[in-house]
Length: 509
Image (cartoon, rainbow, N blue to C red; front, side):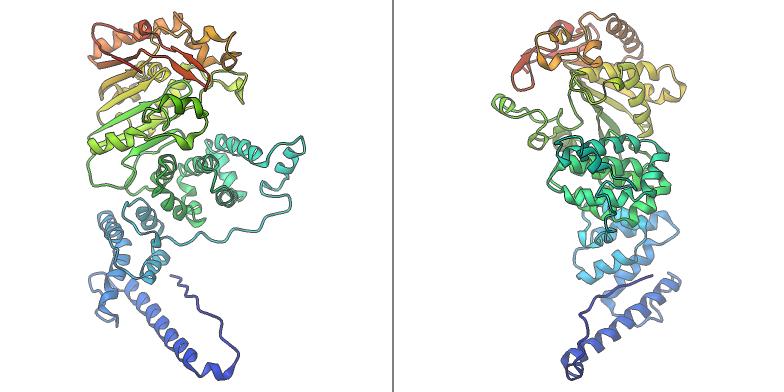
C-alpha cells in the first residue's frame, strides 16, 4: 500500500529548523510513521482479532475496519463495507483520502455508484502526459492540422467528427484495445477537460468510455487513468444526459452488483445508483424519427419555445419525465431508454450509405436489450412514432429465436404513441420541403400504404392476439413541427392502428 503526504519544502535556514516549524515537522513525521506502521499491522492481522496489538486511537478504528472489510473474500461483506463508507459523512478530510488511496478498484467503483458517497473518496486523476508533436489528435500522426488544412473548418467541428468516428470504432472490442494502447484514455480525458462547456463533446467522449468498459480486460486501465473519479462527479450532475452517460459507464465497470452490460445507446434512467430495492419489472422507452433517448420523453414545450429554439439545442430541453416522474411514482421499476440515430434526409446525413432499415435496427436493438437483461423480468414497451414499428418488428423477430423466448414470455403490455402503423405522408413532401430533399431510408419506409408496413401490421396483430398482449394506442390530433418553420400532421388518425383488441385514446397533441 502506498501513502502520500504533501508538506512544504524544508527551509535551508538552520535557525528556522530549530524553531516552531522544525518541531511541527518532527511531530508530523512521527505521526506519519505511526499511521504507516498501524496500517501495515491492521492489513496483515486476521480480521477476527482487530487492533488487539495495535496502538491506535478509537476514532480511527472505523476507517481501518471498513478498509479491511472491503477487502473480504465474502461478497456480501464487501458490499456492506461500501454501503457503510458511502453513508459516512462525519470523517475528516484525511480519512476520506486515506480510503481513497488504500481501497481497491471494486470498492472505488462501488462508492462511485452509491448515491450518498462523498466526492472526497475520489482522488484527482493522475497528471496527463505532455502532448506529442502534431497536436491533440496525434496517435503518432498529424490528423487535426491535416484536416484543418483543407479549409476554414473550426477545430471543434473537426474534433466532433473525430469523436463520432471513434464512437463507432469503440463498438468493436479489438479497436478498443488499440484505443487504449495508443493513449486514447488520456487523450479523451484531455478533451473532456478542454470542452467542459460543451456537453455534446463530453457526451460523445462518455459514449466511447462506456463502450470500452464493456471489455472487462480494460477495466484496470480505465480505473488507473482516473475516469471513475470523473464519472463519480458526473453522476451527481443536474443534467440528466450527463448523469445517465456516467451511470452507464459505472454500471459496465461494476461487476460486483451488475450482471447486465449496457451497450451504446442503451441507458438506464432508473435506478442509476446501487440500490437494495428489488426490481419487479422493466419499462422500455423507444423513440421515433428524429427523436432521442432523453429529449423525446420531455415535458411539453410551449409553441413559442419550439419556434424560437433550434432542434439541436439539447441543453434547453425540459424534464425527462420517465426519470423524474415515473421513477418517483414506481421506484421498483428499471426504466431503460434506447437511442439510435435517424435523419429525415440523406442530403444532410453524414454517412448516407450506412442508413439502416427497420429490419436491421430491430435486430440490433433486440440484441442490445437482451444483453441488458431485458426479458429476465416482466416488460412493458413504450414507443413513439417509428419506435413503435421497431417494437413490433423486435417482438416478431424474438418469437422466431429460441434464445429470445424470454422477451416474448415476459412482455406484459405495449403502449404506442402516434405510431404510423399504416404509414405516413411524410415522404410525399420531399419535393416541396427542403428538410425532406432526398428523403432518407427511414422516411421512405414510412410511406403511406407501404406493403412492408401492411405485412408488419398484419403479422403483429395476429401475433399479439395469440399472445394476449395488452395494447394501448395514443393518437395525436395536432400537427408537429419539423424544424422551426414547418408544421405537418406526420401520423394521421387513420394510420394509428385502431383495432378491436386495443384501447385507443385521442390526444390533443
